[in-house]
Amino acid sequence: MINLFRKRSCLISIGLMACVPAIAQKKPAFSWEAKLPRVDSPGFYRIPVTPALSSKAFRNGAWDVRIFGDSAEVPYVALQSYKTISPGAFKAYPTPVLESHPGKETVIIFEQEPHATIKEFGLRYANTAVPKKVVLTGSPDKIQWYAIRPPFLLDPHSAIPVPGKETILEETITIPASGFKYFKLVIDDSASAPLQINCVGFRSEKQERSLLQEVPGAAVKLLAGKDRRSDRFLITLPQQYPLKELSLSIARPQLYRREASLYILENGKEQPVGSQTLRSDAGGNSFSLDETMQYDSLVMIVENGDSPPLEPEQVKAWQSAWALVAKLEPGNYQMKGGAPGLHSPEYDVTYFSSAYHRQAGRDLLPGDPVPVKGNEAVEASPSFFTTRNWIWAGIILVVGLLAFVVRGMLKDMKKEKN
Image (cartoon, rainbow, N blue to C red; front, side, top):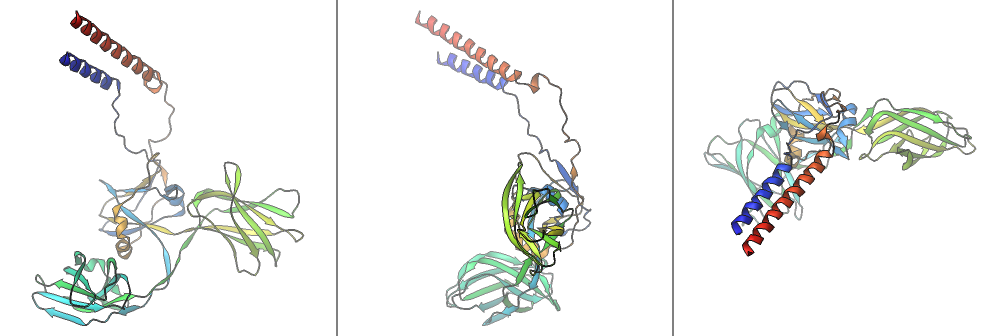
């Protein structure tokens, strides 16, 4: 009886498997692609996010784009571009110990300010192409030393020349937040001659501001109203873009001070996104926008009251400047995105953003996004497998199979009783 039950269970399983169609894993159906210039030499490249690219690549508050080479997908780090107002001065730490033991090691002990916490420091040394293995420890008293991070390489390729001192490299070394007073670097010199160490130090806080780039095609026009005490202006863009700011120039009158509100059009309804006092003595009028959203149509309402109506001369749309930094080998590359159901990629290289930023070199300006060939929507003629008929047929088949097996089992049980 048990063997018979097992046989019928296997029959049920086989029947159910036969009724479930095999699902083949399909490649993501990307809706757009943009070609990159051919890469002729290996290195870290910056791919500027143009306004045209941002209109396609920005989705759900993140960059929904992938970079493909001749054979595989390439990870990247998305970095916002900033203009450095002041780079911050490099200040050297006191180094109570700086010793070189030929054929063995170089020992450097540097001291930081008491009760301070550091997450990185800079090591300056003479220009070289020789990597070195380093052990870093910390101590509160220069007696007992404690591990801070695993042994690592000093890599001259990750360093940058010091401005005005082309023969000196500066390499930034990141560490877990540490509050030790003393830090010790032990550089392995057993395989090669020692490095000529210049100093160990840190940079004071640098001052930066985000770079903006103009999105072309913004236009403004007056909407018809009952009177000019309150004007409504429609601001339009050719496509949906992530925006940071709208700037407005007024032709007339020469002197003005008006309250203005900005609304975004969503599903035919106006949703408030900001307000501003427009002033002739402000040197410029602008509205700040939520960068996680995309905009193509906005309404600006200006309260004129008894004053002469404002006549906008020009409106400009601005977005933050971004770049995708990737390590590329010689070959052809293209960017793709817009696949339904595919989320924005999350790469582990984002943990090394600072290294990617320091090593980013030549710009690769992408072409404008174009629809992916072969993904155009085509109306398929109805067939058995494109309707729900096959589902009902499968259900009927499964029910019939179960009825057959149960009927057979009941017969066997009846025979066994007799």
